[in-house]
Image (cartoon, one colour):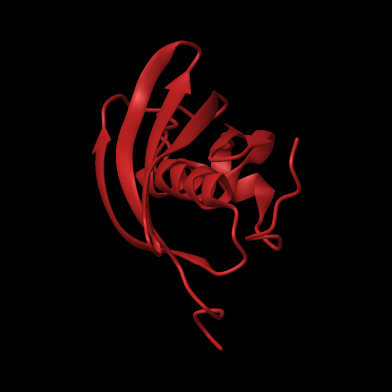
Length: 128
């Protein structure tokens, strides 16, 4: 597995743990927990699933100054607290500073989320 060069301070309990990283590809696994649920049914808030997908996209690009510019996403199935989900990200296009990353989140073999993330690699950190 390559060395992760971005988002090194991320809370992996909230956004997942990288399990695979090669040039332009990543997989990140998230075990959802009760505190991520919005009600007594255990429905996980979509923000956690989006955050997982975003993190997978960022490390697929794997540059210290990568930022998210936009996304087009679909939430396809609900996730219940206690379930493990895996985000798979693949860089599909590079156009100068812009990279388009396709991300799919699955539970077992079932797709629960898909999206296209437009990422930008900046010359310096966005807050610099």
